[in-house]
Amino acid sequence: MAKAPGNPIDKLMDEASEALLATEYFTVVKLCKRALERARAADDFERMSRIVLPLQEARRQIRQIACDAGPRLLVTQRLKPSEMQAGLYLCQVPMIAAEARDVRELADSKSIPAMVLCREPMTRSGKWPIAAVTKGGLVDTVTVRAQVAPPAGVQATHDQPGSTITRDTNTAVPGAEWFQSAAEALGDAAIARVKPELPASWRVDELMLYLEAIPDHEKLHQRLAAACRDAAREGPAQVERRSVMAENPFSF
Image (cartoon, rainbow, N blue to C red; front, side, top):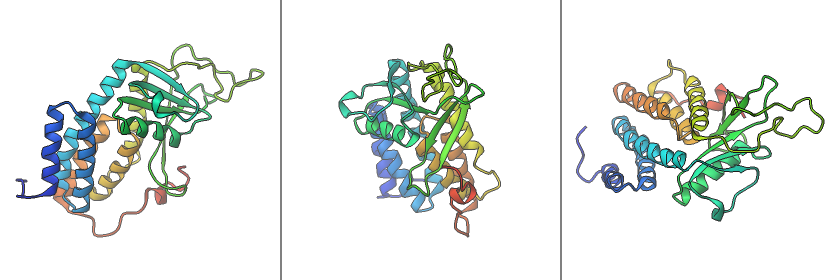
């Protein structure tokens, strides 16, 4: 689709293109997110599919800078803005996924490249549940989880006297390879929840929801772009989309 003279979405994307060339990646993300929301409100799915590409690229660059900076902090309580630096942040109990999202949003607000994951206590099977939450209130927040192997050397302590609340011996932030693998599993779990038989515009909305919770996942961006192209061909669904909570009433 050609640009429409004076289209405010195209103006935002022109600014995003300039910011991308200037390596101002956080500015690109802000502009693309704003453009994506406006295009969705207008059912302009074709533009949405094109907006996702620079958004994905900017986030890829932010993630790479964070991974290059390496392990930064094991987070067990709320952070002050002065504590934020580029790097990898692992939140673990008593922190929960909603608080891990706050850490990521704090980093974003200060334009600090950070990759943030939240792990829950080790399971009896020796896995770490990695969790992320969508935005919303107590009732309409949706949690995505994936169980992954913990970093090498972490041992379970379930049956030991005085076992910690993490149920294991972890006291450090894993490296970039583990972070990227765990984030990949989490995003894959979100993709698996989006039913391919749904109308394309519904899939667009669900993928946008999950991408807000898991912004580091490449394939989530790709699936969103593909769903947008499908929706551009199909047009918006004629009936209102059911809430994700309606499909997963016990998801939180």
